Length: 187
Length: 115
Image 1 (cartoon, rainbow over the protein chains, first blue to last red):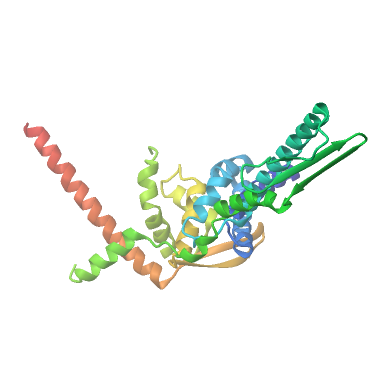
Image 2 (image 1 turned 90 degrees about the vertical axis):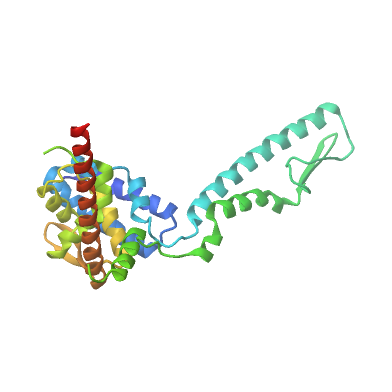
């Protein structure tokens, strides 16, 4: 197998691992699943070629979801962290743009008194600015409230309450069939 | 041989995997090639590998790593005692289903001919 084929297989495994991580699959199990896929892809690549081998597994995302379908429910910490970071980035940009506009407005209006503005929709976050000739003071308080939105997003996406309802899904058809056989032992 | 209906295949995949493994342990791609040789040419690896993982998670299969000269270590699966019982239950279910389908289709054929 040449280097390009090896890289293509490793890229597929990385994507698979990413989606396993997004599913909240723990490190050791992820490593096992990765190792198994790598061995199977290497075998298939040697047999039918890397392109056919990669085509055979389909989308790494769907493969990761299918492989962990019956796993115990786990919080999606990584997915939560990703969305929380994105929310924080949006809020910081929003805060910067809003703050710059407020400062420009104060300077243009020539207001020398302190001005308080609430740039966020939730209660309590205040942006204060005071402009006097040669001096501009600006502050935001309390700053920790900037984290309230990302924290909420993190909790909603990660769903830590999944820890409370972890259970392995069984095979309902087989279970009902077993019960039927037990009821009719003479069959 | 015509391609099998993917939905029907999905319904019997566990039975197929358990049946093939009842004759001896095997690894993911080995099972794919074995099933393709048996007539399931269109069977995708992306269907078989998660199927094996699910069966193992359900306690119907157990696995061990075996070194391979061809590349990374292979993960070989074999049936557990629960897996053998499950296979027996699924075979019975499959025979019941085939019998019922044959009865129903034969009856509808007869009715269709007399009408």
